[in-house]
Length: 409
Ligand SMILES: Cc1ncc(COP(=O)(O)O)c(C=O)c1O
Image: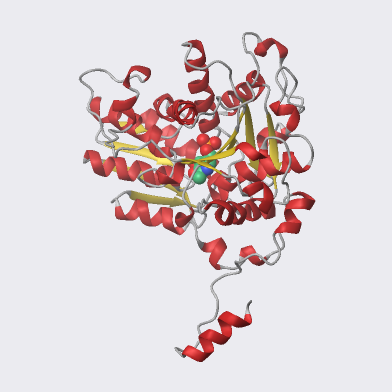
């Protein structure tokens, strides 16, 4: 079936005028995949809620991440307002997406990146789409401050980071798709939606989308929003900026989230919570997702699943699934809850924000060989699983291959 892209599909919910130019790569309509074997592989079979876990695979977008949802709207509006250049700071995926949509529109993209801290696949994307790359000796937060300044001084250059509200407008469509796809599968609306959080635009946008449809009467109950950060880059968990964020999940290596306020609102209004996961837990979750479902996501994306598994292992998932009860994180806000009915016994949805093919270094370097430790039970499931980098080459000899094959049984 032909899918025309987000703007055509959800135009009435988006700030697009009739004479705006639409720049689309037919983004959106990404798979919502049931992860039935994940709980068992994680050693958490029988934990309530995990039997109805879905993965929203944003890696299936044209440039391999959820950024395309926001970029179709931001670049369409930029082109419609006469901009010939878009600029962004990026941990990688924004630059890939901005570069692709600029190429599709026939305009220039300039990207400011933390030098040496962007996954190679993402750099390759920005290069092949013809973007101008400006690596800096600094981190993402510094890069963002620079492009914000530049865009403020040059009104003809459109800033396409998620501080541009048009990006969030596009990204909110993920909520519409989750609601529609679950309904099409005979499921209730989601009880819990978990996302990795870096600059915090995406969780802010998803919550906007759920609220919009709730207010429009298209969604009976709002989900609880769970924001997952990496331990070394967890300003929203700890309630203060992190000067030198560190994590293997480079896409969420951010110490001062620009949309922190929106993320806090999403979590407190929904009765959800923030939590942090370690790099080991992230990499273990990435492997579990791949082996349990056949989906290869990048490390940052796996944080959403690592977070849900960690809550499950600690017995903290169930309270989030119960209607009318606190999320248990101290983020609960009774005032903000007014008007919501609580989750309606629906499933859990983890957003897998980006494609694993963008960042293969961790897998190829054998990171997966390290013992995994997503809670005691998950860790016990991981040893002995495949991984640990590519195996040594064998001679092209039938007997040696047979020996290697049968010897493993
Ligand atoms: C793959 C991936 N996941 C998660 C995030 C975090 O999204 P946000 O910065 O909107 O919180 C990013 C941001 O770059 C990303 O690229």
